[in-house]
Length: 322
Image 1 (cartoon, rainbow, N blue to C red):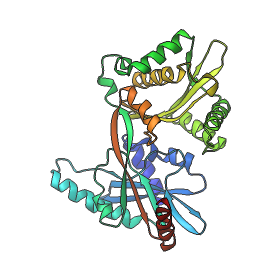
Image 2: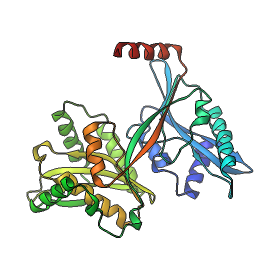
Image 3: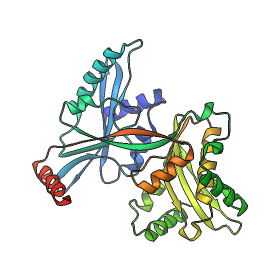
Image 4: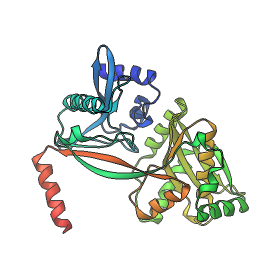
């Protein structure tokens, strides 16, 4: 609790802490487990932090990602004027201290923000890395032209189709039950099940309202049929497409592309600097994201297995893939 209280004050004083590492976000999503934070201090100042989510299951202790959380990982401050080679030494020193503060775990898995480019200190301590990708619209405040001009021809065509069809955007949609039910319907049409509870969605929705950290955007037609909806979260540095859903009954209306466009414009209007689609390793989803004038950004997924039982299980899974 002492570290969490320090961390709360640190986040209040440092506005560039990623939204997924904010205490209010972690409070909202840490169901079935608890979150805590490793902190490195020097001379009464906090120089490095790493929040983590911990839960127990089947007798094992897991440090993993909370539900609907894109990234966690270390955050490091640097002394002014620090040379590059000193920076790397500084990162090694602080990351080692962060690792030392982690509680016992059988399995560790975190996805890090793409701004973190050095994971070597974790490699030297036995962690592994997998590269994943997200898609980001950068420097939105510096762009003077309309972002839609940079979209692919297919996306612009879909947007125009939605406009001709009378689709309008509600930028403060509050019916979380309708949002959730539409997402279930979409996933069911694809043969999938929803991975989060309605109570989780509602808890996140209330948290972002209290912290001015996002809202739901919805696309409806002239008969008030719900075609698509997006839950967007943000701070001044980045907005994130947290949950996107569409009504399979209106798959070809173009509403989803119009909805994304209007959400991006809104985020830019309130001073958000970038828009992160949260990425996907699914081929057809990746194809859609890169058509919105995005830049591909690699980020790290860091893992480590300490339990011999879990290691044997992972080896067995790898063998069975062959």
